[in-house]
Amino acid sequence: METDYEQVLGDAETALDQVDAALGRLADGSYGVCATCGERIADERLAAEPTTEACGQHAV
Ligand SMILES: [Zn+2]
Image (cartoon, rainbow, N blue to C red; front, side, top):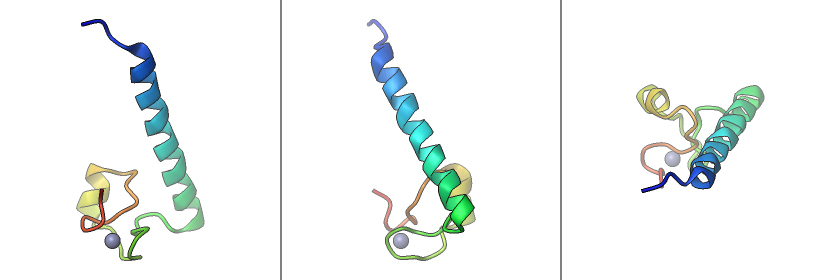
């Protein structure tokens, strides 16, 4: 199957947006806090998925 570069680049763009958003949260001090419940996100979870904005319980 031929690679759908538009799809690949679209995914990369989404990932970039997520990194951007994570950096923004890092700057305003809300990084590592669940956007849903406000609890600290576990370090292991952040290590595995640094751009996540939800704790394990509220991850989609
Ligand atoms: Zn949560």
